[in-house]
Length: 400
Image 1: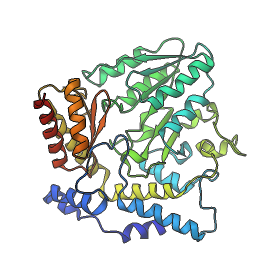
Image 2: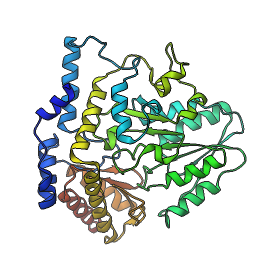
Image 3: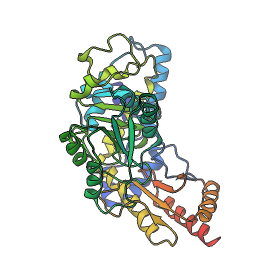
């Protein structure tokens, strides 16, 4: 009740009719009224860290104030408690039973719980792709050095021909010593959406466990976790689901819970009745962040997940088409609407890259830049932000 009254008390969302009549006016009002972003910031790095809207910031602040006043009778924390209401809200949104869901600090922690908690012996094989995030590579690397497991990477084409090509590569890589297939549902480097259910179903038929890094999936594309048939999934609601930083999730399929050892424990860790909650008893932590997560879910539902997906994919397609027309850029994201959501990645000549990076910093354009660059837009991204990005790219190219 408190969360509902808090959410309703903030500036209301624009009428849904405006989204149909004048979509740009609708999304402009969403940014201006629901986010703290200043007009001078062109933020297109949601894939690294999401932007919490005003209702989320308010929910976190209000809970901190209430906990400081000890207005509640229970401890204002998480880390020992099962957080049933919070887990149910998240489980309902992402599509899985609450007994299969644990709260974590982030996807990295969730990945570590699975990688360190499975019984694997020397010579057992874990397969992953060559496009995994360091948070997926690192924990399996520890197991390789510490326990002698084998970690093998499968190279994914850039860009791939179609989803079937990716499924064939990963399924065909399974060998007699393979125990785990560990891969991203959406790759962090290129934004490629993998055919998760097809891969997981085939792996299970071969007796291989599947672990999906879903950090970029929740809130970016429509899906239900239970429909994917994976055994484990890590997630980061702070990227696309409007949660504050410090919120993560771990999905553990019921049949797999007895095969996974907890990494941090308190009394009751071996009680199967606790379900996946056994993997989130990590000691005193800041519950205000998960109050913010629930407010973020309510925010997403109020706008509508389908409307959100349509908008962010429209912006990604806009960036994709602009990049296709620009000399010197190589698109790494496949030109297939089934295979990307709101992440688009490119390569460019090194000299242009250096100049482009300097101009982005000067103009307050925030994107992910490493050996390539990635644009990840959300509903607060404006078409003029994308225009500014490509004007800057053109200027960098012409300056060489």
